[in-house]
Structure formats: structure tokens, C-alpha cells
Image 1 (tube, helix red, strand yellow):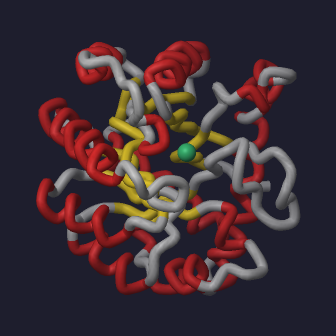
Image 2 (spheres, protein in one colour; image 1 turned 90 degrees about the horizontal axis):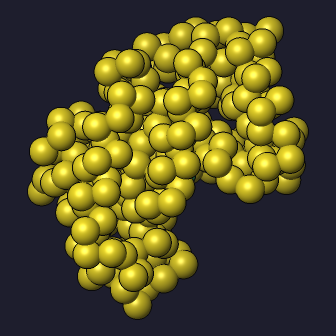
Length: 254
Ligand SMILES: [Zn+2]
């Protein structure tokens, strides 16, 4: 039984949790969870994250516009995010970034919204939570230019890209993908990554780790990820978890 587990990326507002959200969140502390960051993906889910975080001592939230949600934003979306950021459980702007896996026809718009939110985070002295899929080159060049603090969540890049991220002083979030049978890059990154730059996450309800792959994910599955990273690095999983929690608290000022 592990303790002191911090899940740095969850979506408990998702409808996948409608059926048992209260029971599940009420049971997380018994599963050893000490903290959860619920991430917004658009204005609606950012507001839902704020509401949810007020109900649980262990829950914090990030507000932001995900790259898949950049169409038809209200002209004053940054003002809405700024107002949400003033709530006391808001600890980051996220998740924000670039996703060229789903769409390549709006790259310029994705970049514009990403940069606008980075500038907002810098204005507010908040870290960012970055989503980057099939867009590592553009993501890195924007991060290099604007130098925000934060984490690249569900990191899917190579060791070479990870080195660039570390040079910027940023953290790398790993989750269920490191346990997948076909995982090569995430395992290499887990092996290489210094313990003081690692965060753990679920991205729940998605990305459940083996042996729960395909099921609905939740924070109580994080030990499977810690065990896999522990195996790769030759370190006790609880030591991984303890270091990650310290990193998470440091990055987000919790
Ligand atoms: Zn997410």
C-alpha cells in the first residue's frame, strides 16, 4: 500500500465520472492520494474544475484552453481565465499547448492561443501545464522563446526532446503510457529522467495503465505507473512517489 501520491493531471469533471464521482473522490485519500490537480480544457471545464476543487481539500485546479478547443473562443476568454485564476485553489494555467495529431489546418490559431495563455501565466506568475502531441518542434520553440515554468504532461517525446525541456527548467509528466507494451520512448525517458524533474499523472478518465488498460482510469492506479518507473530506474516505487510529490508541491507552490 503506497501513500503520499500526487496526481498532477486529472479530469474528474468528465462525464465518465458522473455515475460515482462523489463516492470515488471520497475514497481517494484511503487509496493513499494526497493531492490531485484537475485540469480544464475549455472555459466550461475550467469552471467545473474550480467548483470541484472547492469541495475537496486535496484537490487543486488549472484553467486553460486545450489546443483542440481553440475554435470559436469568446473575444474575452483571457479575462474569464484571469478571473478563474484568482480563486484560491487555482495553481496553474492548463492544459494548453499544440496538438497536430487531430488537426493540422489551424496550426497558426493553436500557436496564437497557446502563446496568449503563456503570457497570461507569466503575468500571473503561475506555471503552465502543456499538452503537446505530434508538435514537439513548435512546442519547444515557443517554450524557448517565452520561457514559462511548468510541466509537459503525458510526455510522448524522445530523450533528446526531454533534455531540451529540462534545460528550460521545466518538468515532465508521465502516466499510463509508460506501462503500455509498445511503449518505447516513454520508457527511455523514464530511465533517463532525473528524479527531481518527474511528475506522475493519470490524465483520467483516459490512459489507464497496464493491467487496467482500457478501463476508466483514476488516481488510485498511479502506483502501477510508479512501479513501472521504479523497475526501469531500480528505485523503490514509494521513493519515486515521495520525490514526485515534493516536485509537484514545489512547481505549483502547494
Ligand atoms: Zn488532460
